[in-house]
Image 1 (cartoon, one colour):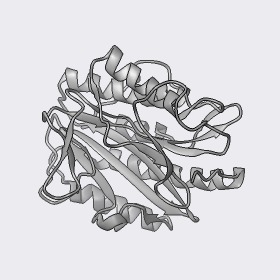
Image 2 (tube, rainbow, N blue to C red):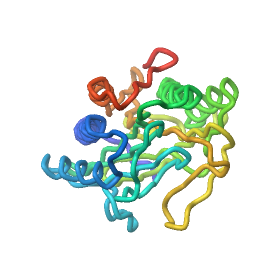
Image 3 (tube, helix red, strand yellow):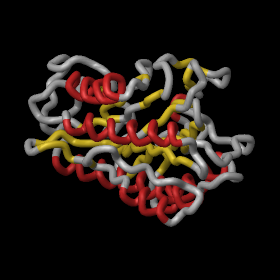
Length: 273
């Protein structure tokens, strides 16, 4: 069942999403080659709890960490550890959720570290831009399939990358994952109608190569089957009468990156919403 949110509830979700982005900005300030996934995970959990919130992911269906930290060919749900040491040239996708004032927030960002190959930087730019293409289609009166179509058309038709099928965005609110599922592929005019008060997380997961994925032996980490790099960006948005309202804010993350010589900025290929 789809749960539509009141204006007041949307503002609570916005507060949670903005806190998520402050956590990701903290990650953007400290991440560099030579440190581990466990280090950024510890910093994120401390930041969240110091601000009166709790990590949404830790303990969720048994997931052991605050962040999902996925490096290079790992798409999502990577488990941070002391053995996960970042190297120059890696791209590190970091997904974070918090529970604050009764509501969840969710966002993700991919951090390119150091001398990243230009073809991989292009993957990051296209994936980040595809997120905003999906948001542009999130208009009241459109259908869920219009969002997926916009992402898929841009990623697969225009840039020949692979959109992951097994993993999708989702509704969000008092629960971390609510109806509806929000695929990054689809057909125009198909699926539930987008109505005012719907809050969803849109999160393109894009492989440089083929779309197929597998899950590792840890039962969590999803990786590209062809072992080519994958990127992941996510915003939580609300459907409004006058257009999509982005509740998360990547500008704090981008500002943190500008102050970190170890991380490369990921510019959009087109104007953002």
